[in-house]
Image 1 (cartoon, rainbow, N blue to C red):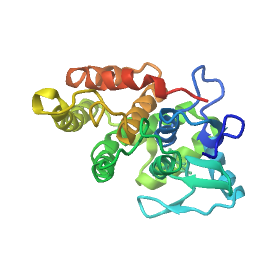
Image 2: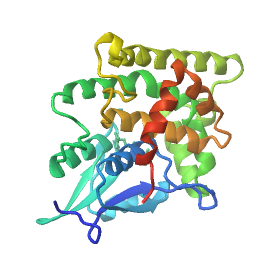
Image 3: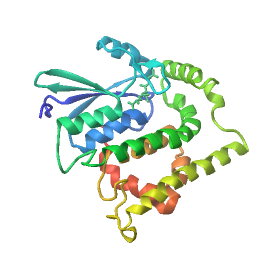
Image 4: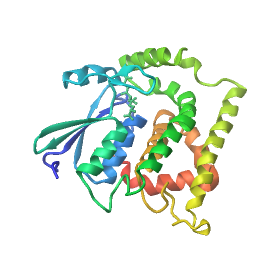
Amino acid sequence: MAATESNPIIFYDITCAPDLPEAQAWSPNTLKARVALNYKRLPYKTIYIPYSEITPTLKSLGLTALEGQTGHKAFTLPIIIDPTPSGPKIVRDSAAIAHYLDATYPDPERTLFPPGSHALQELFYNHFNTQLSLYFISLYLPLVPSILDEESAEYFTRTRSAALGKPLGEVYPKGAELEKMWEEFRGAFGVLDSALQKNEVRHGGVGGDFVMGDKFTFADCVLVAFFIWMNKVEPDRSGWERVKGWHNGRWERLWNKSREFMQEK
Ligand SMILES: N[C@@H](CCC(=O)N[C@@H](CS)C(=O)NCC(=O)O)C(=O)O
């Protein structure tokens, strides 16, 4: 065990505009890693940086850009710096961080990838990233600039508009399209709900509200991170109010059971 309370893991996260009254963490990608760190009860300290500072900060740490899902290279958060006995170790990407934490800080009671679940969790993650994240992109990505400082909002709008091939403001569905998209979003979550029903005791499962039933895992970090994002970028929380009511309250139960892993340090 390398990190201690006096020599904690350093976790880089993205801040929102300083005058927002609530906690600062908002980004779903960094939140996946934060929830994982909290779940494993590891000592860590957050360094918050504005969105527009991610690239210069990572360059100053000697890092190079990584190839992203769309093929273009980018400097992204989260990263952690773990104070290992052989020197500081930088780990990048939320899923890679979760795997690293399990390997470096094994705890049979607090495992993000329990034995035998690696492949199925990978499938879950791919499913989430292909079947669900597109709705988050349309419904939530355009709201992000509203919680960022001016420079970061400009950077975010410019880079996301370029990546999506149209102005970010035009990504948000208009008129009847909005309700249609919410219905589709509900349907996409419904597919997940049908699968998770198999955890119920009547189907021979172990019961429980997590993706793996009674065990919290990285798959739950993913869902919870996106739910927190919804709550952070939409001040009236109207989207989360809808989702909470879907599928017999499944997503709200998951939220409530995961609350203890949402704290900011
Ligand atoms: N697959 C990566 C994605 C990370 C990612 O896209 N991070 C965004 C923040 S939400 C970022 O740092 N973007 C920097 C930029 O666009 O300049 C992970 O899960 O860590």
